Length: 78
Image 1 (tube, rainbow, N blue to C red):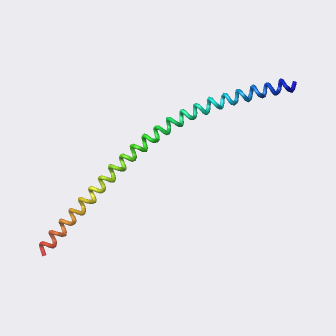
Image 2: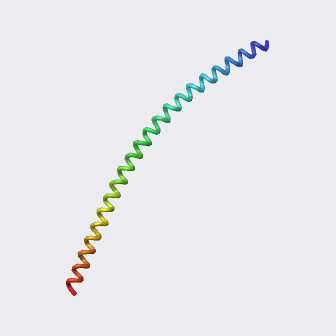
Image 3: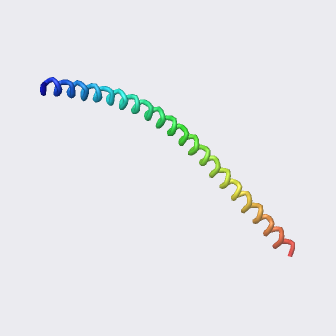
């Protein structure tokens, strides 16, 4: 009787292990796909931030040049 119970428990444990292996494999596939999507989104965000940074630099330079022109005009008019 003890051996039969032990065999049943062993079979049950083996089934649980098989089920866990399948669930883990499924989980890994899903996570891999999610990370691919996340990295694509991060790349898009990075590109957008780079463009925004360039625009802000250009705007800053434009403002500096404009203010320098205003100062030169004011100094010449004195």
